[in-house]
Image 1 (cartoon, one colour):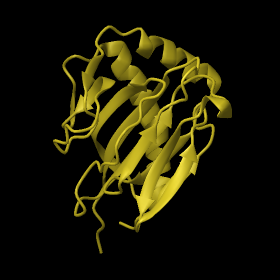
Image 2: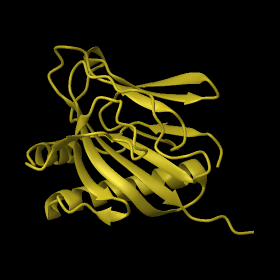
Image 3: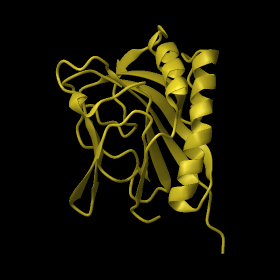
Length: 190
């Protein structure tokens, strides 16, 4: 798979974002955890609501949250197809993550170099203004690419690329809610 990235604005409309944001934020099953599945625990943990873990529905996930996650994956799978020309055949993990003002992640990868995976992050926060700050960064061949946060934006990328999120500025009225998912691609047959 090539080391490519696709960023799209308004992949989910404000009404849907508001509904998902309110329902997901009110779920009592959040826990502090590390987002990556590579055993890297040096990054500060985020509040995470796991929906799918290791290809299975997470036991702590409610029916309502699972359905919301599945709704988002329908849209995200189309983005994966646009990026790669291939189908996303399995979901290895899906979670909702909240990043509070001033919290900044650390660069990490979601899988090894030899795996064919695509990660898609979708910003669910209903409203976002540039003055709130925050950005998503991806490194490709030692060059850093910045994607400023926008409400409804999705970024799809090769899961083996180093990436990180930078939280909102202190004083922002919203914590940032993201839906993050890693997809397994179909096999190329010749």
